[in-house]
View 1: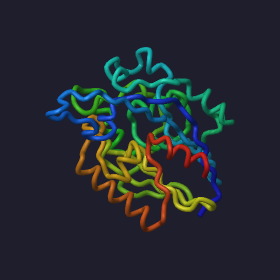
View 2: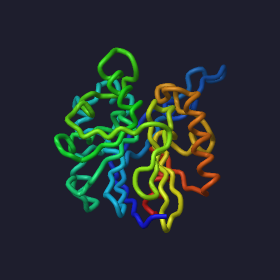
View 3: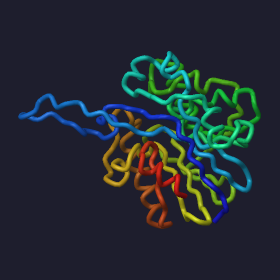
View 4: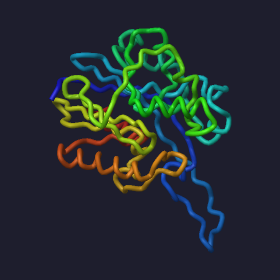
Length: 263
């Protein structure tokens, strides 16, 4: 166990059709062939982990100009992001400057998670990302194949990449990377052992909300690279929870954000 603090950095709200969040959330029936669309909100947040060995930023959120052309118009229409601000401003409100950050952990490189990387361009700040994620992000952004949720302008920059290989990798004391493919090929979870809170698993977008994790309801097809890999990764996280009596944190769940605020 390590004496570290975890500070959430709130970065706004994404609103989308709940069918993107939970597969088959609203289905037509004979009695109601055209059910009303239900929209759901989810917080976007980053974390500052103040660890004895480093001040770590977990994810960088959305680009502050996501609503004015940085995101493709059709994606912004499907995943409206309100409360957009520069990463520097949201860090400052929490008492941090970009220069305070010793390293960045990118869970993955989707547009709502990697949009603040501009703040580290041209610096020596290491940006940790799984090799499969970086490869797939470039493949997606630079070809007509892959996943449209990668925006080259987020990550195709002069950054000090540090590549994570394999399924498990120790980073600093009592903090371990856990490869959780499914949402994307290279999603990185974090297992953190805290003095006061015990084991905390930052599952990121392995589970968008509690329903994806607790009820084992997959995300909609737009949000899954591979359902088979997602189910395998779900088993991995549930095994960590069972073996370590861990607190599992989902990627865009408001209740889990409140849990983080109380750690």
